[in-house]
Image 1 (cartoon, rainbow, N blue to C red):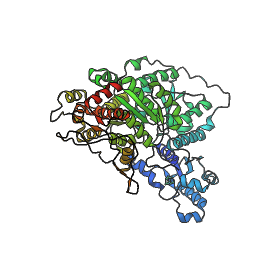
Image 2 (cartoon, helix red, strand yellow):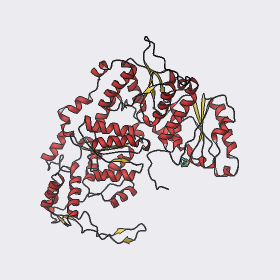
Image 3 (tube, rainbow, N blue to C red):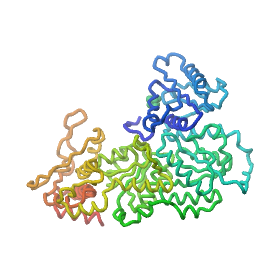
Image 4 (spheres, rainbow, N blue to C red):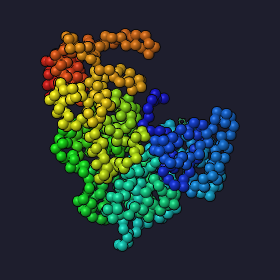
Length: 568
Ligand code: SF4
């Protein structure tokens, strides 16, 4: 058992739904209890799909468990086939149905339907959504392209000289983060290289299209989490090589163009000479100088996290202070990337672990999923979303790819937007008493939302208890202590002596810890000269410095001693 409040991924049958919903002419019969139809809303509300996903649920109830649930499943398959007339049928079980072991695959095969039936074995208690999507896509590809596999040992015939190189694009799905626009962007890029796209799959593909996958010269794997497994099988079966570089970021897109051109036997130079991307110049322009060295924490699926870390470090000059993923299947790749930036890789699907690591790393920017957006909000750190899981606002109406040269433009704006702008950063330091650009002001381009974040950034240290309390509370704003000018000594910030209520409401004994730490008024005043976006970190470091030395009062001298200590 694992206590779970938020999960980064849904059960694997939702991954299977993402494949079925992405394709044309495929229907999925899911043995599932009443209530599992909640998953439809992911598609119709978050992705704002125009139609329901092509899924028939058996929706068995408690009273059905005393009867024949296998018969219920068979009836559902027959009715779904009659009603939807799909070209291929997926059958499988959700978590609860897995426990009653009705064998959906065997039952459906026994019906003798005139279309391919693909049984899905998705272990819901060991695997998650992305694995479910990858496995489903692989099973479909194997079933539908399998009959065209040449005999073992056959050599792939060379492409005719008058024929343009052809590739498949693998991996984009329904409910994928910016998949729709990424496909458009990458297709345009391939077109400029003179490469024809044979099939895009699963997004928009039919079973007949999957049967043609072997006709391409090579495969472009856009999302390894969903497409890599099928690409490996295609490589083994048809001798098709596949791309390794994911074109997210300017540098990665240039590498991708070079890699694809080599696979296709074409010249990448014209495309590389005319990238049509503003991102590299924007990053080099003098206005971006202030971005250098900004501390960034990156977390997401492996593909997007690795790409975002590279952009942050190599294209924007940020310092990567944390890198992690919830994609356990791609932990090795994330570990290798983390080693490049000299940070400890974080492989976890527990958002509290992620929150703790973010708090400890004191970043000035978080790049993560919707979960990290909430975490960063609580910690008062600017944040941008770079990976699923995402809310409805990350399925935007406007064109917003992450991939290709236009994707690099989008990402430049995405990473920089939550930060204080350079001019304002200077104004804050020069005119601390100004009614608008005062020491506590937030980025004014973010309006009142930014002001709230600024207030939280200045909040006292985030202890493990405070984190737990904040997590338990539904995103309550953290109060900022108000300084009375006349007060000789500011309020304590780490008061271990105060009893904390126990789970049952009664007071519990405080731990026998170090004495409470107080800030002298002049030290607090000195601290407030530091711009708000680094003030929280300065406060925490100074308190840690004082605590380690058993000091109970922080003076101006302590503040500067701590500064000297941490900047060594
Ligand atoms: S069967 Fe699985 S997906 Fe459905 S409600 Fe139970 S745990 Fe959730």
